[in-house]
Length: 175
Image (tube, rainbow, N blue to C red):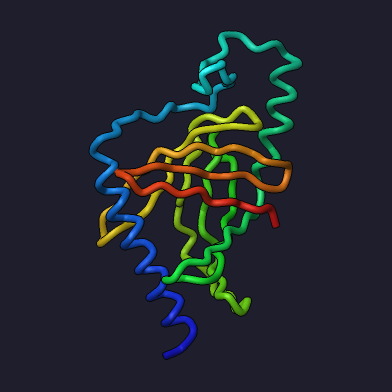
């Protein structure tokens, strides 16, 4: 069995497990995505609250920080089913940020080009925190999973989701 066959079988198992969990939690959560990125602040209960009219200086700071998310990101996985990494590229498209898979890497560092599939749509982002839709495919069916993004520093952020009892936090590191 070649490394690429093992890699794709491992990815299929991960997607299958994640898809099952996401499918179960998808029906209990019905959130709609916003069409544009909006400026947000966090209130004392850690819920997002929309800011009405940010000043020009606030907009400039947010725009500068929001560009930190653009670029190439790597997520390492170390599970029983898959050891390796997936490399993503986040681009700004029509006032939104979207992430695409660009490469798969096994634990030995061997890399294989990915099919450039959209896996993340960021619906709101203030430079530090945001919300989005994590996209996964399971048994030929696509699932949109609500997720939250929290920057820990300039070069890494945590993407977290809880979908039908399956929760995970992925750490994305800038390349």
